[in-house]
Image (cartoon, rainbow, N blue to C red; front, side):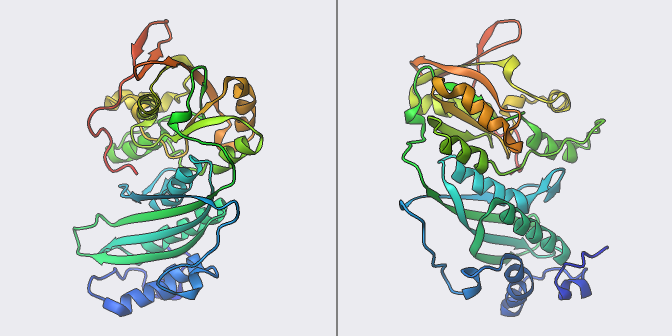
Amino acid sequence: MEINPACPLPIQRYPHVLLAHGGGGKLMHQLLEYVFGPAFSNPILDTRHDSAQFTVPPPGRVALTTDSYVVRPLFFPGGDIGSMAVHGTVNDLAMSGARPLYLSCAFIIEEGLPMETLWRIVGSMRDAAQRCGVQIITGDTKVVDKGKGDGLYINTTGIGAIEHSLTIAPQTVQPGDAVIISGDLGRHGMAIMTVREGLQFESTIESDSAPVHKSVLQLIEEGISVHCLRDLTRGGLASALNEIAEAAGVKIAVEQKAIPVREDVHAACEMLGLDPLQVANEGRFVAFVAPKDAERALQILRNQEVSAQAVLIGRVVENAAPLVTIKSAIGASRILDMPSGEQLPRIC
């Protein structure tokens, strides 16, 4: 095994040593001393206290979110469980229009996980947090029996500052609102599934896992009337639109030909019997904005790399019984249902 020279010295010396359950305080001390502490070091974490103490900038409104990540495999084209845990929680905060500030992180590690694997994931989390401008300020580590943890599970909780007066929620959605998505759909779910199923394409399908908060904050800073935001994770676009329609009590109409899906993603979905509109994404969101701001919102989003493919896909039609319709390329409309069952387990 080729060892990254940036790895802590004990891991370089013993790269094949597996994490052993029952190491007790010594094992946890070594993980904190050589792995988590150096990777996530910051003034708040370095106090090594049972709880983190911090201040939140004015006006004092905060957003709080938590999520758990159980993806298999741990590494996939375009990302890994570590970077995804940071991106996913940062994106959840962004859907409230919050500026991400701090994360907590808990690791559930299965006995037998190679130390080199753990370090790669921790390093990926460190790099992702730095790119997102957030600090990991507290956490926890547990080791469970072999066969009980599928390698590694990660839980992250995020805190962000809400620096605006908007109410960004489904209840704010109004008839006439423009429905905008930030880019092409389905890549994360298909990146995971193609690896699992051993599917081969001319080009590798890479996950879209990425932080979207800069795009969202830019919309707000530019005065766009953002009514609702939703990241397109489990259940994809279909779930997000149906959930918002139900909460807002509106009918939403979108056009299939306006929704970007890469050819290789579409082909992979067909092979696996999946609908790309129901496949999870980790770096995409839908925005409902006032009709007068639709064109300007698109221009702002397209100036950010993560949302450079932003497109208008439809409108909120009317206050009515909750419903989402989609018009096909030949002009026929059908109901876009909420996904039924658990199509894609263990992809986030």
